[in-house]
Image (cartoon, rainbow, N blue to C red; front, side):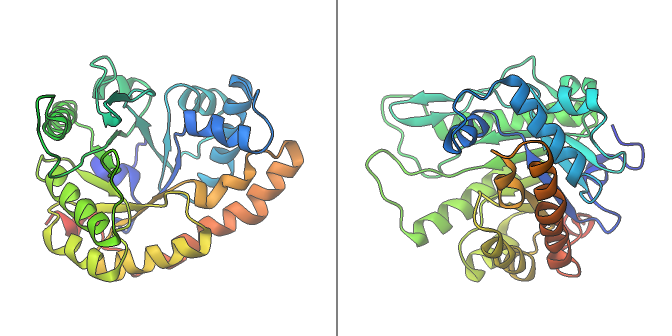
Length: 301
């Protein structure tokens, strides 16, 4: 854990802004290696990718989000994380459940806040997929399940004295195609419902427009950070500007938009990319949110 601050301050900069690098991908990272012609990438390859990204980017970042499978142990053993950078640990199970084609959230009770603290973590990050307004038929109430789990995560974190960061990804029902307005509505409503459970920070998808961001600012009663969702780097800069200017976002939690091309490169080539492309990209993100992002301390006051 970092020594400089407690609570959300441990993963924010001195101005109360989140500039967090996401490198918690597990199954996604394997698919990324396969997509660049390395389908047989093993644990050692994934560990090294985590080490290289952490070493290059954590000196600039306020926090890094890592998985407990490869990311935390590899970067800890290698001493790859800058001392000034807070650590968020992904506490959701690597494999998500499924019910008739819909994602079904579940929680491993062993992967609780104390478990995160034992790994040196400053915050618990938990991924869910909440679909507001999902019809309830004869099967389980999947939306209610998600909110029950989020409440349990928030309560557990409060008891352990560590912040809860909940990420939501909305989804279409089987056979459904969402319009831009439907996506905005679902992103905003899910963020409202998750914030109302008492979590400390909500990590959400870009609502798609300035109007959507203003709706978040008006209705979400918790600090929020925008995720990159792997969009192109230039597009992400516009997402950052609008999210902060119009939505009162307190910063970002971004991964692939910054470092994705490093996957598939090895040794000196990867290091050169991280030094000359990824690190300047992260600095550009910092410059974009500077003076725009709403400090988290204001968002909770």
